[in-house]
Length: 130
Image (tube, rainbow, N blue to C red; front, side, top):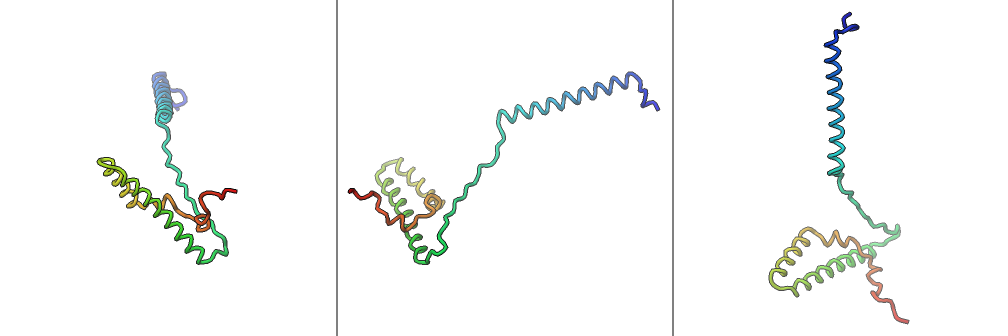
């Protein structure tokens, strides 16, 4: 039953081990907080997905008209980009053409203009003057 009355050297050693362990654990926790405050927690970027909601009684003709309007809007954007590139000269034109090629290869038009309504495309850009 010596564990009920340990010698003084053992008590001192136990207190030193426990004290040292508490200091090490405290230092680890404080270091973790400092590192986190310095560089922060890098959570992934939120992925936002948009979708179009259509009427339940939408006809096939309306769907095809919307698809044509969307494709026309995408093509108009690409034509505008090509026209701008044609105005450039030298290294600026080469760089712009490379960016355009990457944009087209990456299907950027589909991501940038996901949907255009045929009815919205039929509305004139400027309101009539009264």
